[in-house]
Image 1 (cartoon, rainbow, N blue to C red):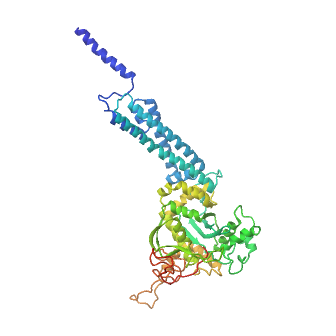
Image 2: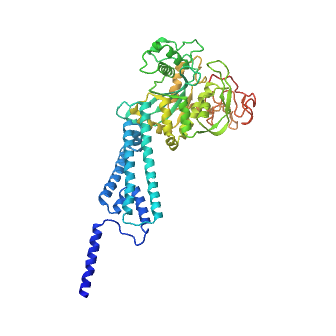
Image 3: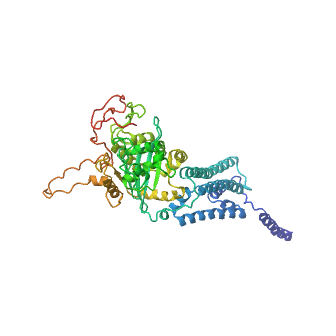
Amino acid sequence: MSSASEDSTPLSARLLAAARQKDPSPRRSSRRGDAFPRIVGWTALGTAIPGLGILQARNSRLGWALFIGFFGAILAVVAFVVYRGPLRAVSRIVASPVLLDVTAVLLTVAALIWLIVIFRTYREQRRGEALQRSQKLLGGVLVSSLVLCVGIPLLVGASFARVQSTTVTTVFGNSGAAVVDKDELWADKPRINVFLIGRDTGEGREGTRPDTMLVASIDTRTGATTLISVPRNLALPVFPEGSQLASVFPDGFNAFGYSESMINAVWTWAEEYPEQVGDTGGLEPGMYATMQAVEGSLGLGLDYWASVDMKGFEDVIDAIGGVEIDVERPIPMGGGTSLATGVKNEVFDWIAPGPQTLDGFRALWYVRSREGSDNYDRMCRQQRMLKTTIDQIDPQEIAVAYPRLAGSAGKNIATSIPQEQVNAFIELAVAMQQSEIKSAQINNDVVNTTQPDFDTLHQWVQDQVDPQEPSQAEEDAAEPAPEETETPEETPEPTEEPPPGVEDSAGKCFPKGYEPGDPWPGYPRNPDAPAGTEQGTGAGAGTGAGQ
């Protein structure tokens, strides 16, 4: 009897060991529900590192395939980023419709595979385990939460990639040419000049007319930029020597008489007489002729252009959550004279002075308002708003609002920048944010805008785009050297107010003759006062130009 009993013990052990080898399932817990913490932990870990939870559950072939594939994909992305550099890697993808479409497909496929992995990991971990009803419910909540945490970002990323692909194609085209980096594209070009024009197609206007004109002269290596505002009332603009338009107007543009032939009228004339403009290279006659006038008058060759409708500007400001700015004085919203009827427009609202956040609508009026002001003050506010906006752009806010912003870009932005060069401009934009942006205002202290000496203007422009030269504001703020007869005890006279259109030492803009803090005609004594209640008749009053 004792011999049979001794023989039965090793036989049972051998049978149990054989059964375990045939059944790859995890060992059962001694009590119902004891395995739940392990199931939760390994499911979560297997979601973060696909394949790991399946490996732990002894499904080695599938687990290793997922594990190796996951880290292989990560290594491929890391290698691409290291090889290209973080900025160039990202810009290369976001500027290429092909790569964006491929990215959208890969993210969608990755989302589907990852979701399957989550379900499979949970199933493998649960195999052979008895759970309580509440634990089964919590397990379902866990799996659903993990699916949402993984699936939503990947599918949103895929959607954004498709939106970006469509936007790049719409705004920049898709020539199929090879993408070039900044250093390669401008290896032999130390500076580029980009013409920026705000187009006003508001209600009551026939066609399009330039509302804002700037030239951004950018150092292609450092990103140091000079923004040159071109006044709309620059009279008798000249065209580049040897051009078709120079032969039509050898003494400067004079199509509407001496007092009306300003640079912002070139567009209207060109649209009416396209045959005299000549070959525009596919551009609108108005855009081409206006660029020619800017080139000839400033003595700068324009390499690229970008046109933004005012609605597009408003959308950008709203997309970044508004712009924080210290408004220097009451800004009338409305006013001026209607171009359609000749009737004085009503001031329907005000932008109050002081620190605040302007939404797109009010920011647009901040840069547009001409009531009681002049072109130079308006240009100063435009540059101030542009620089402030660049400083405050938040990538996270842009990302949240991007689909709507991209749709607006397709309708309101046009540019000559080809798709294959967008990558280089993204790199250049980052360099611009990290460098100085100088302001340069063409005003009557620079040149008589009604009878311009263009040789003088050309030299002034060259000085302004030189990064070694001080900015216009710095020159005007500099105190004059004391005369030899002065004694050290004498107090130097205060610096004069900056010329029209040039920001003061605090970076603010004021029309000529207005002292900060003075009352503004028509501005209510308090925000709740009736619209007709006036605060005074201080300096700065005027009829303004048509809105």
